[in-house]
Image: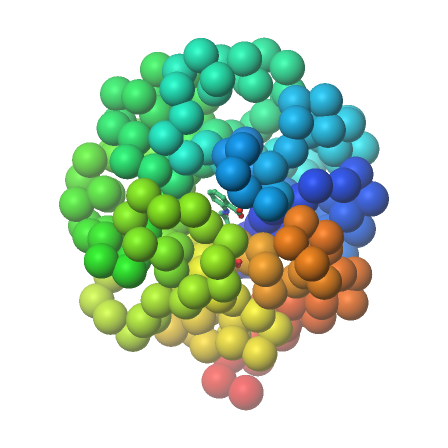
Length: 209
Ligand SMILES: O=C(O)c1ccccc1NCC(=O)[C@H](O)[C@H](O)COP(=O)(O)O
């Protein structure tokens, strides 16, 4: 089974197209105003409009209120929502969209979050503390015991030089990378994205190399 790849924290249409052309399955758009990668609704709508078909757009929120999520959903054609804060299952499910629940692995309990969110399409294990913003470049210990879940997405501090170890160790459904493929916060680097995606493909073709 092919490991899916999401490039997160995209702020420009050209970066979304570049990621898609390099082989990304999804891009992430941050709707958390304090983030340096936060996009406006208009900016996000332009990015999604530039995406080729069969590449998903994921909207990220961190303890946003219901009205904010609803407003953005109606302005931007998102395929999935991703919640990074302390959102309950009832909160996440109220929008009727498929969603990914992030788990802050620096102190968070992946089993507890998995139990609390049985309807989540994905569980994104990230390196930050619970309820904190992502995109920090912090990895977690991939060798710790983790829930045996088919919906695991690994994030946090992934780069071209360590993604193979993460994929081989966890065998996740997907990987998510933001700062590891940037030249500056929110500005993606073509070569880094291409090398990162090639490395994921390589480790799947030649595990253990
Ligand atoms: O990227 C942000 O600024 C951000 C802010 C608030 C909530 C989530 C955020 N990003 C989450 C992501 O999905 C990142 O891709 C993920 O944390 C991995 O980031 P990195 O360690 O830089 O690869």
